[in-house]
Image: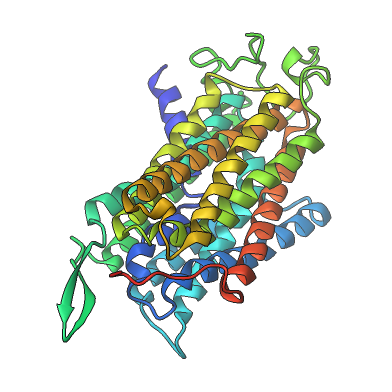
Length: 427
């Protein structure tokens, strides 16, 4: 791979990392936020609903996209990334402001970030259809980095550990301070988002430059020889450009060898309902009864696994519908186990803090890996069908539909029933 090819791949990864960086960065601070802000353990469910209310962004863009085809996606992407930088910077300063017992500015800036992140599913992904298929995988690796980078920063920050200390006949938690504050953490994420914005500008500048010279831009073919994508039978996949090729479609895109796009979209919604709706809402109840360390370790490891799992389809793509359905079922069982642990709270699984803590971490890591692998595989399969921008747009729509339904189901169950109960920190 030449320097130009590597640069192109790197720019796409950096661009992809901006997709959900803002939302994930706040999620990685939940161990600190839940112990500081007035909402306590119910904060994740409130934030999950704020994120899903931001689905108005993809809806508005979808209407404009269909009615005003002259919209410049490049200009919209740059505007969205700049909004993310502003919201992330605002969070770094005002995250702790509360009014009436609610973290109103946290919700406001989180909504702005989520608006950009949610719209990225229907704006950023279709934009990638003009490039070689391998760069769609690079984009999903970047999406994985949007959770990995906050995770690594949180490791450097230190977990929100505490000791139970007796005080006037009661046992109360005494927290150990992190190595650096929430504000510094969020400020670093804002700087990364600015870097991702610059990466997109450079990427688009190269495309514009090559198109003005009448050449096929480097990023459309740069990885074709270096990392050829193969379908399940080992056949090299052809690059897909904006114009229809005169060649016959490869076996990977034929109806007989690829699952129906409608089934893929349905499975996409199911996976993302669990990934972005159910697990974020209930994970605190499934992990915090065992310890703050278990909660933080589960968040960190699952976010580290995500980009690795997103990278795997480049080398071991799956196109078999029974196998994809089986993996989806396995991911659903992992999610169901996490929900079961949450329902047990404040009790421990089998009355064992050690066994329950280990299984809590393992289940959320397995679920994260399966969900990330399946999300990338479904999008890649839809990309290969043909009319790639069309199907990637609908892939983003169904990601949001699934995420919204997952959060909409969990929010009332957590906040308006007694099914999920918080455990005292020192029990």
